[in-house]
Image 1 (cartoon, rainbow, N blue to C red):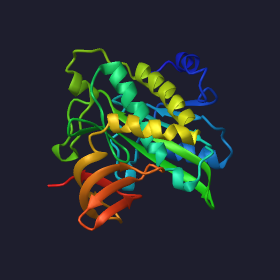
Image 2: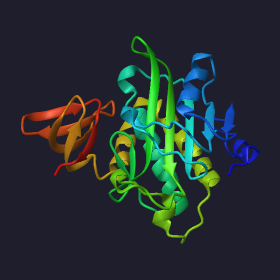
Image 3: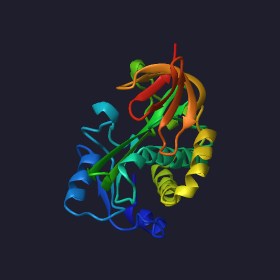
Image 4: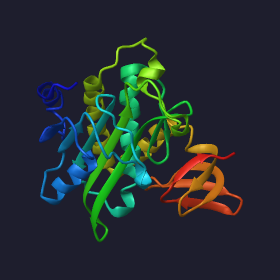
Length: 259
């Protein structure tokens, strides 16, 4: 499924050119990355698996990670960010993943705050960022990325799709090519994130890639439960919601279309 030497050569000019760990099977690439981070693994290390036996999404939801059917990886970064700025990580990762999928398949990807990748109403990928803080300083963050590639069916209750289902055989699909384009795009987005003046541009790009961030009636689930119309992002990537009681800033949780 992957030629590790080819991948290393393709990403040699990025900040991910250090350690690439290719695993045929693991419980969770995020878990592997976190354990290695605590033992001093360097910035830019990658864990890439062909199967996860205990893959996770946000809120401890399971992520279906059957062998050879999806893109499953985690990236360790040691960013110069504060705790308040961490919300940018799933968003810029979503932007990089959406760009990569669109470039490789010509499919339109919709980013749903804070971490979902959709094609139409169905979920094709997701992002899980886990971090370790010392006070307000970020010691490290692990960016987990999962994309459904070759699955031919899903239980209806999952509301999921795969790139293969959407392409219907019309375009060849390579997990390795998608991975390389994604990593190069993510390297660029993380570099932009390190410059606060670039965040206005990031907000504009996210608005272009998402039907969820502005003018959408949504229900927020999580500790900030409310219903209202999305009104963009604040300077830290938090979601703004215009409710009947005024403007609210959503710092955690998720959103769904309001019924």
